Length: 177
Image 1 (spheres, helix red, strand yellow):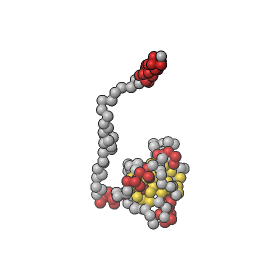
Image 2 (spheres, one colour; image 1 turned 120 degrees about the horizontal axis):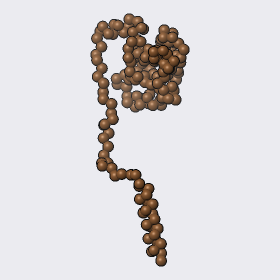
Image 3 (tube, helix red, strand yellow; image 1 turned 90 degrees about the horizontal axis):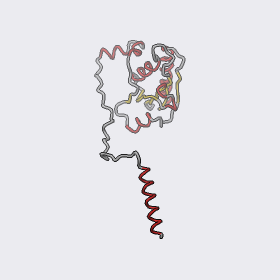
Image 4 (tube, one colour; image 1 turned 60 degrees about the vertical axis):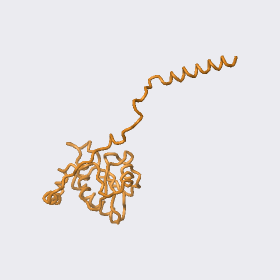
């Protein structure tokens, strides 16, 4: 008597299990290509002496450049890069450039970085905004990123995590004093 009820229970379990698999298909392969989504390395042209001289002429040149969103000094440890990008390093100071004109923003940025380096800070955030209210696109963001890329005291910069301002802010990792 119990074998009949056990058989019915087993059949119910089997049909319930088969119903739960509805819409699931068998994989063709269980192997994953770990390298398929890796970004390709970009080759950077070697700047000529003339280009370096032009960079130092005035700050107006800064606006015409198209800086990358992120930059890490060669030799910076991979773990440090990951911690910077993920926002896991403690932000020790920040500068909000909202509302500043280009020249004022550059002056504020120059002073802020100088003071941060002098104070021995390592991780700061520059809030430059996304440029939604600027006619013709963002003005401060490319200026800030380009200026940062030219400074010897900067080891890295990248867009901040959403909690710290997302693309409207940049993490900046400074050399130790």
